[in-house]
Amino acid sequence: MTPRERLLATFTHKTHDRVPLDIFPFNGYRTPNALGLKGFESFDEIYASDNDPIRESITTRLVDKTTIQHGISAGVNRYMITPNQRIKEEVIHRSPDKVVFKQTIDTPKGTLQALLERRAGSVDNIWTIEYPVKSFDDLEKLASIPFELPDNLEVIDRSTAESITADGRSLLYTYISSPFVCVGGTMSYEEFLYHCAVDLPAITQFVSIALERALQITEAVMKHNCIDIVWTGGSEWLTPPMSSPSLYKKLVVEPERELIRKIHDHEGFAHVHSHGNVGSPIINHVMEREADYFEPVEPPPDGNIEFIHAKEIAGENLTLGGNIELSLIEQGSPEQVREAAAIALDGRKDNMVLAISAPTNIPDFSEQFGNNIHTLIDVWEEMGMI
Image (cartoon, rainbow, N blue to C red; front, side, top):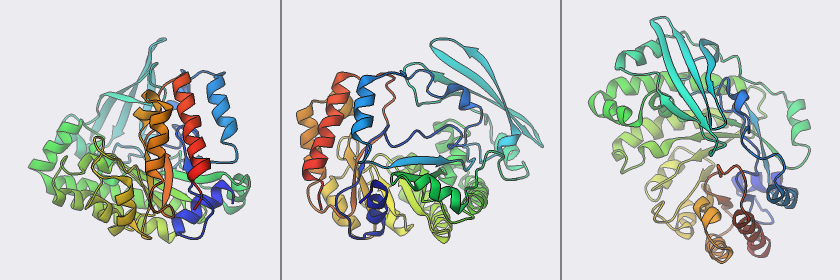
């Protein structure tokens, strides 16, 4: 089977030859445009090395083994999904260490400002150093913006989709943050939790606005029924003990269930991404909202469930990604990686993807990193057959 066929068969729980392998950051670069981040084209891989022999050796080895995420922009941002054309940006600082730029958001009730930063030691992270929402009134300003489809939204027709996926590796992916994250991302995390505690009805209403905008965008970007997978992330923000079970249900499960129904209406698969304590009942809640793929499933201390047990809970209702911790790849030994991969592949294999828990942000790959990735591939080749 091709890597593309293998992964899609896993999501549908059909017969496939071996466990799919998914290695960040070799599964495709999620461009800033695809993530709905306007203006970030000026930062594309500016700190990553062009000629990295370790990176090249891994890339070459994975050619016929892994899928590639071909990012399609949905134009979704974490400013209550404010239309992209309402945001103006300018670089205000550029140095060898960092790039800082200012965003100015035009609303009918006044302007808002945010400052963001990208640092040399972290090639794929964007740091918010000033949030646009400083008071509850600022949420009202964002909500007052008349919604229109973002001007960086892409619509791919079936002919184009077939040409992209003809390589047997590429998957058409689009990225839509959980609706509550599109509200919470407008302010500091502490402020968001505070407002959930003191004025949940208002937060719920803002999440409803973000959900409605996300549904319109999903309808538009998937209109030709050729997007393979929609990534939805951020639910770890409210995974207990970060919030109460009732708050998780209200702000995560219910809105995401509506979004996933829309994805399924357009023949796509729903990929839910969440770190942390995702053992029961969180996995059950992911199945309740009818997601197709859930990752990462992390053991202690980063999570609270062993992968072999999670796979039994999921059964044929959900495919799970797991679980090789990024910290192990960056800091562990090949022997430790081999042991972790063998543990991940223990038990049932029909409902899993062997995956690293997060993308590395290291600009230059160390020899240790390269050796550990090659060891992971070795174990997959030896033990990944179903």
